Length: 107
Length: 122
Image (cartoon, rainbow over all chains, first blue to last red; front, side, top):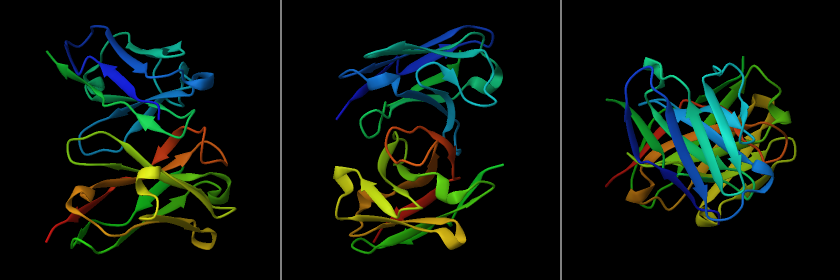
C-alpha cells in the first residue's frame, strides 16, 4: 500500500499570503495519479487538482499542483477567505490512499 | 449538473448491518464507477470499495473484504453500500463519490455525495 504523508499538519496564514502544501508518497505514484481535495467543516471533499497538476472544472487559477514520483505540492498563490480548510492529497495509481490532511487556518 | 444524494443518518447496534444509498442524477449513471469513502470523526478519508454499475463488478479494500457489499441498481441510478458486523470503530460519515470514468481503479473522484453519518452504539 502506498502511504501518503502531508506536511505541515497545520499552516497558519493570513488572507493574501501564499500557501505551499506538501504530499510525499512512500513509493512512486505511477503516471502522476495524484489528486488534491479541499474539505470544509460539515462538507464533502471537493476535487481541486488531478493528474498532479490539472485543475478540476471551476477551480480558480490561484490553485496549482506540481510534482512527480514521490513528491507533490499544492500551491495557493493568494489565500482568499474561503480557502481556509483542510486539504487532502490522494493517490489513485495503486487502489486509493489519502494523506492525513493539512489544515490551513487563519493566522 | 451531476448530483449524488445519499440516504439519511443511521444509528445501529454493534453486530448489526447498515445499508446506505446514493442516488445519482444529472449524468449517465452506468458510465461512471462509484466508490465509497468513509471518514471517522475528526479523522482522514478511507476508501472502502467501488463498483462499475454497467457491469455490477465491485472492488473492495482489503481491510473491508468480507464485511462490505457494494451494489448498484441501474433502473434507479442508485448505488448501495452495506457494511455488516458493525463495531464502534465503524462510526463515521460515509460518502459515495463518482469516478471520472468507467473503471473503479485509476480514477479520481469528481463528484461526491453529501455524506451519511452512521453511529454504532449500544
